[in-house]
Image 1 (cartoon, rainbow, N blue to C red):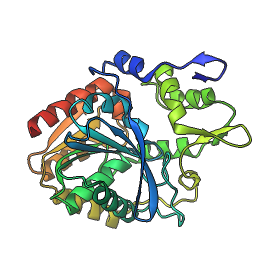
Image 2: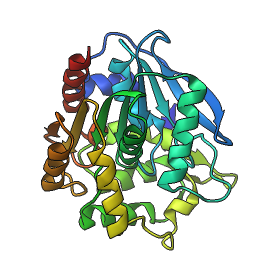
Image 3: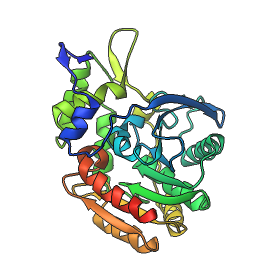
Length: 305
């Protein structure tokens, strides 16, 4: 496959190796769909069906491919399910525009039940991390381990505003390379080659020949209200206080979204939890430092065995 003007796209496997990810086989996931909670969801099914399940939840304005590097090594010992959450990737958009935490929880309950998942290791980034820790608090019997990546009951304003500016920029461009350039300006922690490898998974071509993001346009609306406020923050801290399973908190050392102070407070309120701060990573830890993420999570998973 090529991007832009006949420029070769590096393979996932080559980019993973170049990023320091250690894996023993070039696994290829199966594209699957499940109907749950009245909607159709897409997910990538990696690894053996007999392995312990790991459910991966991406962040806002991302897709299941957020986890491709991580899935390569996770799938060697686990059944890895990387979900496109509602309104993202190849999953259905909410017909009523409901993307509230409550709607996401209804999806997770139905998907876990429909797929028959038990004793899950739940891993979530940003929005997916919020969905993961709420689900864990409400369904402790289903989750044997939790990894919260760059998600917290409260966020730093600077990082939230930076994300908002990025997603509200013009969303129809002439080429994939234009999106690559924009993403590289937003965060220079990833090389242009890595972005060229991953960007096609986040875009779709329109009938007019232009390219656009592969998620519901309602997320890009400047009029969309931000789900924040003292009452929501209080409720989210309440979920944190109810978590009892082994938990790993992951923060990017250069994050402008989750502060070190907030991450430390979460560690203090989740009994027996651990905090890993990943050097060289900002908010999007699994892509910013794939090898650092692998080291922290693999050590945590070894402790669950």
